[in-house]
Amino acid sequence: MEQQEFTIEGRNAVLEAFRAGRPIDRLYILDGCKDGPILSIKREAAKQGAQIKYVPKERLDQMSETGHHQGVIASVAAYRYTELDEILERAKAKDEAPFLLLLDGIEDPHNLGAIIRTANLVGAHGVVIPKNRAVGLTATVAKASAGALNYTPVAKVTNLGQTIEELKKEGLWFVCADMNGTPMYELDLKGPIGLVIGAEGSGVSRLVREKCDMSAQIPMRGDIDSLNASVAAGVLAYEIVRQRML
Image (cartoon, rainbow, N blue to C red):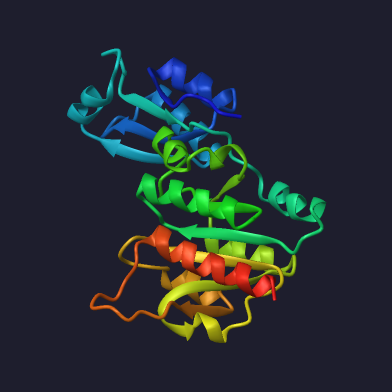
């Protein structure tokens, strides 16, 4: 499953990578470039749902390893993404109630890797991340996961709120981390469940939070009022494990 993270440069190379179905996380295009080959690349990117960033020539020059980027560089995922259905089938094959972690805009690769590691240790069946405004499966994420990425599938979706609605039809309930929520020990977190963790600093977005059935507060007794996203994920995930063991 593991692949080495790398970039692809040049118009023909990037276009062929898209047409070959390579898992491209981000596409960097020279700001203002709108010629025919670039438009073709953008169409292919839209089909795959790759995130496009328009950057100045100086940025592309810095990123380029060959010096011949031709105004476009693609960042290829270090690992293959999994379909959401595969994660649900994984739970079914184990005869277990589905347990998923959904991440709303995690941008720090070390946090993502740590959460994937926690997901594996708590027996979660998979992790779900959004395509935009979030880090993908880079080599740094793989390293931070301490090998867990080889065993824990990660699905990438276009719209996290819509994905929650789809998973509700499969019988899942959703709880999100929220400083203003109900203390986690007072919630019933057993059964098929999706745990939603928000971005560093901003937390779970309003639109995603409104899709959730419950919001969970982690009791805190210190002088600061927030936890690192990966730590919060670990605390709440293990409360779900604790309740499943009762």
